[in-house]
Length: 194
Image (cartoon, rainbow, N blue to C red):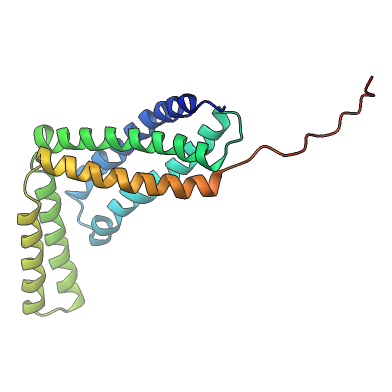
């Protein structure tokens, strides 16, 4: 358990699984969000599938990781293992997301943003918003679509650098929350000592 390479290895192995699950939770729902007619599903759905579910999976995988390495770890060991797991997951998710956006479905982001625009207009009309407010909201969404641009390697690498920092901070938080030190005193044996 003292071996940091074991912690990194076990973290990386679980990170591969977590990364694949994160990728599935990002890409598959995107097809639904790009065509959904529900304003709230388009707005709140990605937060659930892109943030809350991966966070819950990360917590579950952290408990599984701690169990795999013996059930006890210090803060430092927890940070090493969790960072390895989350970094590998982030790397898989980022690279696969880039490939998906660049080569598989290059127009998916724009379709999703256009669907947000359509649902926003419909929602605002039902809410009684005037034409000026609707036009202003539509301009904001059009501006966001223009600013997103296409997937490129420099933006992906910049995003990976930022996500590495975020992953390290999350690893620190998880390390503090999920550390479990070995008991200082072992239970007294019932057998007489010779």
